[in-house]
Length: 406
Image (cartoon, rainbow, N blue to C red; front, top):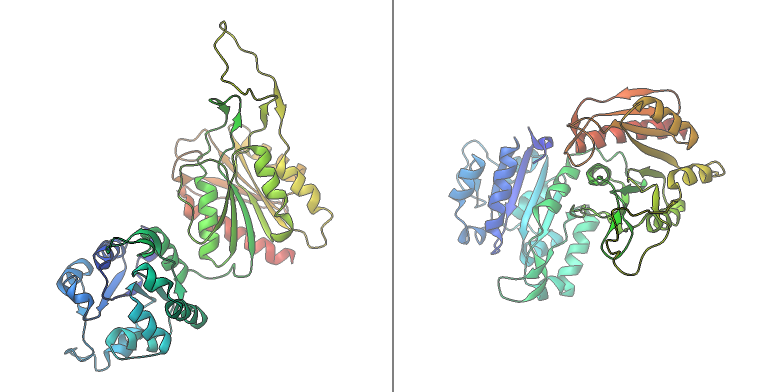
């Protein structure tokens, strides 16, 4: 769980759905992350899980009725609306969504939502037919027009046995929306193209040439840019990572496929970050059948792949409105020297250099220690950070540079 929630005040509004039990883990996770969580339940929700459960998990009093005795809080729906950094309504039933869309304030939760001036995140959960009904879809659209964030439901088997959309969204998607609610939206309006992961160059139906890139740094860049309001497209080689929520993702396998997908999106991007570890070489020919072992040696003829980042830099030279180009250099020796060379040769605005010989940085691990080099001669060494924290620091530098180039 992100430390970004530490010290935040969060109101979780829980309504009457069988999915209520899943929110127990969410409340516990937010509390463990250092957030002060206040739970407001509808009376229907209290039929599924006792308010006492959420009081124990949050460490705070749970509110259910509009006219509960509230001590010194004379106007609970106003006071609760004021004191929180954002409101998470989960699960949100069709009835609650209709109330919020219609501006009703006939229970404590709907009154709080109506009075709130903080970000509101809505997580629908209901039968598929109810979710797909035109009335529900119209109500969700109205909530979006109000400025609420609607996290699309998951698809799968419902409690009623039917299949389709309407399951409570997974926590990964919801937590990203929550992080976006407490993150400065300083990348709103930006269109970002990011590459991530390795590529695989097939030798035969069984074998391929690749590298140890996990894709974690590129995925962190995609997540954090989206949290900050950017429109993000991620072109990803083969990884074992879950797709980042609310990011347009294109899966590729080979360097040629990545080249095609990046080049065709060049015109639409404001900022391009090449974090992928693209194979420099590929087998000159791919065998249709598995290569059999014959003798103790096998000679492979390799052909060079196109340098995607170099071509982007060349194209950028003739652009009326040049893109911000950011590269990555994973080096094991002469790290800064190699980074400076690539920065100049590939016409980049910034390059992120990391020493892959370090055990706690680089491939496969969740931390990184990088140095940022920019075209103005700036050298910015970052300490060991999580890859999400590293990504945010990279975006800080890129946005600062973009402001000075515009």
